[in-house]
Image (tube, rainbow, N blue to C red; front, top):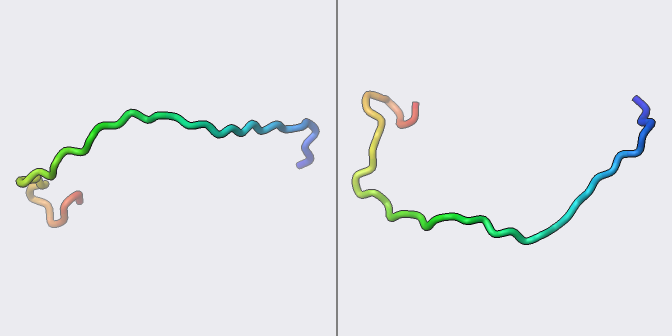
Length: 41
């Protein structure tokens, strides 16, 4: 299919700041799915 109009693409590079949070310490008693053969199934 021939293109009859010109196509323009803009590209830029900039630094951004993504606000995140600190990871919590691992839970010594993590919650598991009950009555499942495999976790997440």
